[in-house]
Amino acid sequence: MIGTMADVGSEAYDLAFDPNDVGPDSVVECWISQGPRASDAAFDPQPGDEVTAGDDEGAPLPARVIRRDGNRVWVQLDLTRSVHAVG
Image (tube, rainbow, N blue to C red; front, side, top):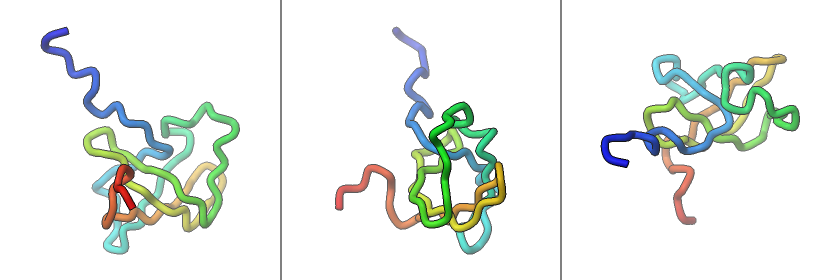
């Protein structure tokens, strides 16, 4: 198909975040109910868990859950590596 953008922003991630809300310590608040896994009953991120976070404009970023309060999850983004980095 010519002229489609179907592949843009199609990489899967666990939590959605607003890049404007990322703090100087790379911590951002996410809402499970507003993310792509909102309907996944098995998705239960807890402090210490590694997840991926995305904003629909760039590649997903690896992150670690640092706090959870019900539907709200705070993650620290790892801006030093990408999700697809070879280690």
